[in-house]
Length: 318
Image 1 (tube, rainbow, N blue to C red):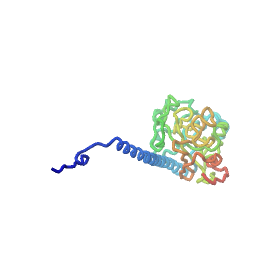
Image 2: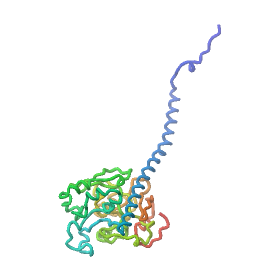
Image 3: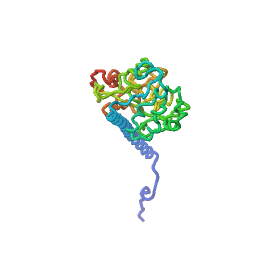
Image 4: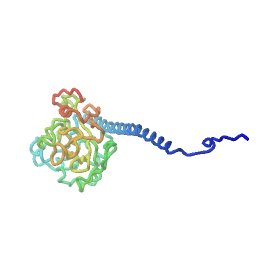
């Protein structure tokens, strides 16, 4: 009788050997190692694009404001104590309303399709953040403002942010934050407060406004706003509706891009730096409305020259 030779592997299901399992796991590990960075890169690219779109919308709102009013909005609507009695438009004996601390973001709310929020804050009636944070009359006497300063809207926030939308730095006020700030120029924490706030060389100042005719360096070569990172602390609070130099909505190019809060040249622990969570640099809006990613390795002199409106510098690269 002829014997039947049986290939048992073909006749029934048998498991993988240990060596085979290890080989498969190694292959999967290699594939994950190859694809994961690519996936993360795509996600970061999407977040950066979304962030750039936010900045672009702010830039267009500023230009629409300028077209309607004839000048850019001020970085801060009113004066503060450091300007009182020094500038003709900041005379002595100002009322709290005349020391209105509302930021330029409040001014362009109608251009951002946020008219209802502008009406709620009603900064011409009772002011907002008067006399810096020492006088909170506006907060307790106007319920509409009480709730208004807590409100945010989508384009205020970069997708890469890691902080809460509400800031408690100025308790009892709880206020909404933003990932962006206006550029005052090159004069930051190492200058006296009056010069930094009222006599800076950039697009946004306290009380004073800029006209397009003043941008002698060219609107395509002058930054108007950029990104900031916020630890929700005094070092970088960045409340969107409050204009406080070096910390809230008003920044300078004194320190290099991505200088962390509390580091570099500081005044009362605040450095006024632009920074982002994007690898390698930060995004900036320019006076003509376009947006660029600026490397953190940019020469500091070149970086600062981009923030002046009439410095006369020749910028060869960014």
